[in-house]
Structure formats: C-alpha cells, structure tokens
Amino acid sequence: MFDSLALSQPLWTKQKLPFHAIYPFNWHDPEKHPLAYIIVYIWQCFVLTYNLTCVLYIDSLCVHIFLQLGCNLKILCLELQSLCQLSRKNEQVFRQELYRLIEFHQRIISLVDRTNRVFYAPMIMQMIASFLMISLSTFVSLVARHEPSVAARFVIFMVLSFLHLSYWCIAGDMVTEHSQKVAHAAYEVYEWLPYKPEVQRDVMFVIQRAQLPLSMVASPFPPFNLFSYMSILKQCYTILTVLLESLD
Image (cartoon, rainbow, N blue to C red; front, side, top):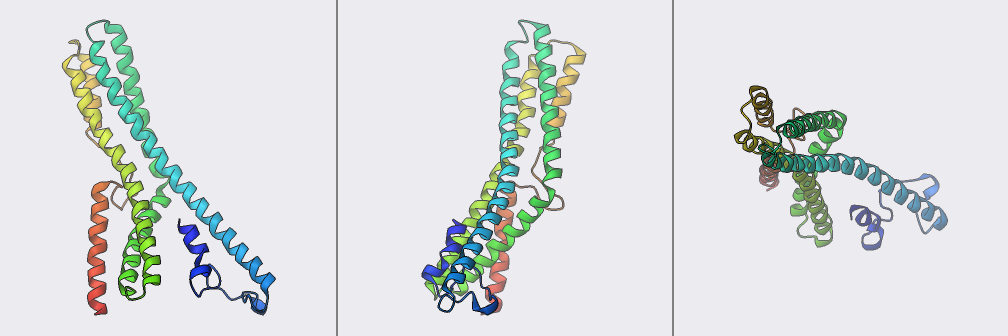
C-alpha cells in the first residue's frame, strides 16, 4: 500500500517523480527529456519497491519466527495437559513424555533468546521508526487539515504505521501470554504426579522457569506487547499535544 501510494504521486499531485530529485541536464523534466524522464521514473520505482521488499522480508521473518514460537508454546501447554491422562496408566511412558516436553520447553527458551540477539538491530529500529512515524504523520495530518489532499496522504501513512506496529506487538504478546500459560499447565500436571521426588523436582523446575515470561525485546526498549503498544500511543499523544500547543 505504501509503495503504490508513493509511486502514484505524479498522477494526483504536482510532483513529477516519486522522490524529489534533480538530475543532470534536466533529465527529470518530462517536457525537455521525455525518454530520460521515463527511465528515471522506472528507476525510482524499482529502487523503492526493492528496498521496501527487503525491509518487509526482514520484518516478516522476525515476526513470523515469534508467531511460530507462540504456536509451539501453545502446543506445549496442550501436551502438558494431556500428561494427566498418562500419570496413572504407565509411569515409565509418563516420565519419558515429561522429559521430552522439558527439553522442548528449553529449546523454545533458547530459540527466543537467539532470535532476540539476531534481530536486535531491526527491533531497535522498528521501535524508533514506529514511534517517529506515528507521531510525525499525525502531526502533519493535523497541521495540513485545511488541505485534504496533503492530509489524506499522511492519514494513510499513519494508519499503515499503526497496523505495522500492531502486527509486531500482537506477535510479541502471543509469545509472552503463552509462555506464562506453561506454568499453569505444568502446575496441573503436578497435582497428578506420582509421589517421586525426582519427577516432582523436574516439574517444579518447569513451573519456576515458566513464571519468567518470554518476550520479544531489544534492550533498553520495552518488549513488543500490547502493554508497550498502549504506552507508545500515550507517548505519541503527549508529544503531539506539545507540538500542537507550540504551533498555536
């Protein structure tokens, strides 16, 4: 949507190219050099689309990894709940399944930590860029409210920024929510355990570790979740109010 909005600017604004640029020999002027203008326009379209595709790929890869980790945590909760049916039937099978799920939980924790390290820089830039884009696009929309064509562009840009940040925060919140549910699922297993200290100790370790929620986070910024999402919106509203008061 942003790509089509930027590339179609020459059709509904006075701007002749997607980006303001001056080329040698006035190649950017369609009246003097129509062929060169077409080449420049196609080149800007290609560069913008290529760069946006790369950014979208990195963002989607990070978010989809966390969505898959959230689904795996949900599967872990369901499998822990199914262990209650095995506790009284076959103790050996029960212990084998329990140890498998403990290893599965440890693997998920390791993957969350590794993903946070690999995508540390993109998550930092995502938090900063989202904060700036929402604040500035809203501010420009209100300033240009008497010019509908200008305000409409920034309103669309603001909505896209909201949707983009919402997608990240929903993915992070899914991981945090399901990681906390692992502790509740393990506690339900604990009530049906055979009275063996080593098995109880293992389940208690899972409960204790699951009480530390996993999160999609890039320090020193807060984690991506719905609580942080609301905090960002409040900060944007505060900055917007200050800017409007100074403008008045």
